[in-house]
Structures are given as structure tokens and as C-alpha cells.
Image (cartoon, rainbow, N blue to C red; front, side, top):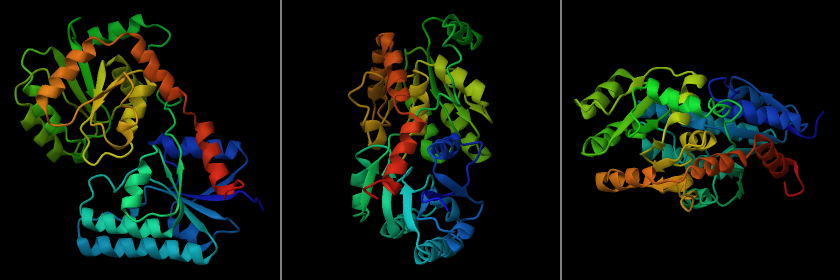
Length: 350
């Protein structure tokens, strides 16, 4: 049996390339990765594995009913205790401090603290993640594993023909003086899109088009449209966006605009930098690690004056900044991420 047998949950999903790429890269290194649709199967039958590696455990826990939330938390923690009793050590990649749009943040924080007490290793995508984890009582081993690029799944459609980028922008009805701002990904409450809409609406005299794009619940779309009002510069695009269409939109944009609540790791920022697109957003957690770079323009929501200043600054960025953003993203590979995980769990220091 392999001495580098790793149990990973949840099972990779084609809709989210993160786990698919990481698992494939671990297997390419010779790690025997085992996944299952249900965490209980992995915890009850480790079959000689030494490690259970968790991602997004909040998916098992969230529920609008507090009693069921507590029951689900108890079930998760019970499974982890079973896994440890069966000889498994627990590792967790901290994609979020607490889960996005947690219906009960107080219960979510308590669940995170309990999870951290059971973890032997926690991976974070930026060094300062350790500060947030320590504030929740974590005193175990922290490993910095930079978030890899998304170039394999969201390649730049205009890389071979830069003139196609201009043609795509014209197809959106943009003039040469218009900035294109995008907010990619699902339109969930934690992204605070109505707040962004109100800030942008107040920017008289600025020429731009803002396109938030992604799946959206009807109530969220209603809230967003109310914040947009009759401002034609704000053009939401709700619904599923294919990888090709999302790559085209983000690559064609002058900047990605973010205002996430309780931001930790930003996959939207990684996607944007992969496509050479600067980011305007709050200089906290993951994004703070990019603050010295010209391709990150810090802005603390909801300050409209500061946002207007950054839009003016955006117009003056050198063309080379896009290349710098892309190079920074591509420097973090899936092979590197797999090597970091492999060494942390099965190397000499494990």
C-alpha cells in the first residue's frame, strides 16, 4: 500500500477547477489520492491513509435553522474525531475564514475554532492568514501555499491576437473613452454588489461600464437592480457564464472591482491576475499581499471619492502592468502547490 496515501474531501467538482487541478498534480507526483462523495466513508475506512485533507467543510454545516446548524456541526466534528481515532491526521486548506454568507456567523466561528483544534496542519494562500487563524485559537503548523493560477481553465482568449480584445470591447458598445469594470463570479450577498452599485452611481463625470456577471438568486438580483436604478453605466449580466465568455469579459476589462465582506482568499483576484487584469478592492487579507504591486489598486468600500480616484489612476496605468499581473499569477503553478502539500504531509518535516 502507498506510504503517500491522501484522503481528500470534498470530491473534485468540474465546476470548480481548484480541487481537480490540485488532485491531478498530487497524483502526478505519485501521491495516492482517494476521494469520496461522503466524508463519512473516508473517516470510517481510511485504509492505511495517514492524512485527511479538507477543503470547504462549511458545505456540510450551513443551514438557516440554528438547531440543524448545530447538529450538522456536531456531525462533522464527530466524523473528524472518528477519523483521528482511526489513525488519520487532519489537514485543512483555509480558503475562507468562515464560510461565505454564513447564516449564523457566531456558530460558524465556533465551528471553525473546533475544527482548528483538530487540525495538525493548516494551509493558507497568503502568509498573513496565520494571524487570522491564530486569533481563532490555532496553534498548530501553518504552511503557506500560494493560490495557483487559472490559466489552464481560463486561458487568455486574446493572447494570440491583442486586436481581438479591442474588437470584443466594441462589441459591448464601449467607446475608446469608456473603462470596462467587471465583478466576476456568482452574485452572492458577501460580494456586496448593491454597495458597489451605489458607489459607482455617485461617480458623476466618470465614463465606465460595470458588468457584474454570474449566477444570482432572484432576491439578490432585485436588490442589485434597485441599487442600480436607471444608471445605464451599470449593466448586470445574471446567469451562468461559460469559461470562454468569462475569460473574454475579464481579459477585456480594465479592472475587476471587488468589495467582498469578510474577504479571505480571493479567487476572483487570482482569475483576474491570471488574465492580466488589475484589481480594485479592499486591502485586507489575501488582497493586502498584493498592495505593493501596480496591478492592485487598494480601495476601502464604500468610499465613492476614493473609488473615483482609483478609476482615474487606472486610466494612467502603463500597458506593462497587465503583463506584470499575469506573470505574477503564472508564477504560482499547480505543480508547486502539489509539491508544497506533498512535502508538508509526507516530507521530512511531517
